[in-house]
Length: 640
Image (cartoon, rainbow, N blue to C red):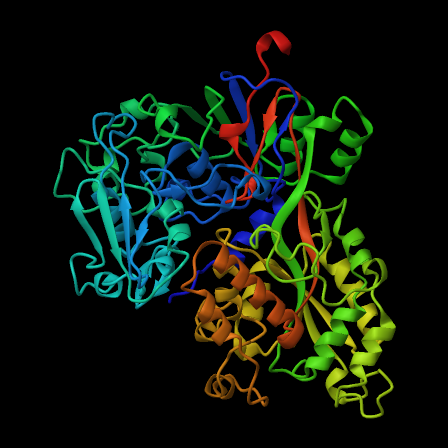
């Protein structure tokens, strides 16, 4: 198994977006096809702008880009219906595949049968999607690229390489130049893709729902081009992308693939003030796509100069939604107070956990009683209130009480009512916390207060942005009741990540650790954050060091010689599929919370999306937890 990467890299987008949510579709008037949907992009020019890498399926790694791929531009073998968990939004469905894959009894071979007659958009409207196009996409993900890549096997590969590397037969040999093809990807005919694995991986279907696996058409002017239409676009294929979804970039019909890549004209700009326009793909038919309703005729995405301007344009009626920004407290109050606007405010769950992460290899957090005491001590209700900050430019971090590790959307609500450390109104219980601390050797007189020097001046890192510093002060106050004295150290996001993720830094506790996932399956949480074989990776999200070996701990300079592991249970879950795997990941969650206790969860993030009264239909896509533009219908002009 190779681990998913860049999960924390996605977190700023999650926190800045109202779109990081799971919501129930609402119908404020009868949905109708047609019209122009106007969406603002508040962070593209100011925070995450990558030029030609924008919407490059093998390069860009942000959920808002993923949603534009899923809803509009690209189809994959398997995909999602663009709806919340309650409406099956976390479930995989056939997309370009004619049916769900056939899996061999040993789990080592998956066979995908493609639907026939599906063609690309202009300028390749005469080219049918074929099995080799998916092989081309995976090969591109495993081909060295100069930017938006991650080091692996001595090469700089796509950030998606970890999803396919190692467990698909022949991927490592291909990536290191020892083979010209990937032996584990076979195309016995144009409509059959066979994937051979080195070990059973039950979530393979989810990995083939990622935009990196979307088909890349051949280059009709150069059939020998291994990367097809993407050949030569090493600096980014996104602005030259040939669509397979219901929409395409305006002007795609004029893309001249006969020219050398450096002479081809990009289809859109990514500078401040530019507008990315999507129009209907004439090759797409709803009769072959049961997942996308594609209501709007046209989608305009304007790159706004600031979050404030994007919000102001929405309030003035110049936008229908801010696609990548959380609503502000002021907006929430205004929409809530006006009955005419209330139906257009959508408050939903986000697949994001904010937690206190404890390093099990640093005293006093090497003792499970201390870790349980921390869980009881937190006043989670106070933290929830502090999260909604008026001062944060990214809007507000709304939320509900966090009680376990994987978001409920990931675990299909199996643990919706699970709380292993209950306290009255989630307000914390100093009494229960002290009872647990009294069981710890760090409390020599068993009075419920740590009296060991390890509890004094404990370094505690926190993000310096938004509400997190204020929340850190509240956590510090809570832990003083059990004798743990925190020295809170706020850091900017990039430095925070570098310090926290490096095991050599031996950070005892992180007060604003963010747990996200790349697709709605527990493997995207429990493998990167808790699986021992990944504990020493260069891109390591296991800050609690669960599962680290004694040899690793020594090499990192820890005095603690062993930490708990859940590897055996995780390895039980990896080959399972469907509801069996969901139940297994929920068992891992409970095992971690009750016996290992690496985290003290306190907030499952909410998201808030405000839309204009022009929006007659609204849905959230559980895959990305962003609004689904293909499901956003507009009221008829006669009703406006």
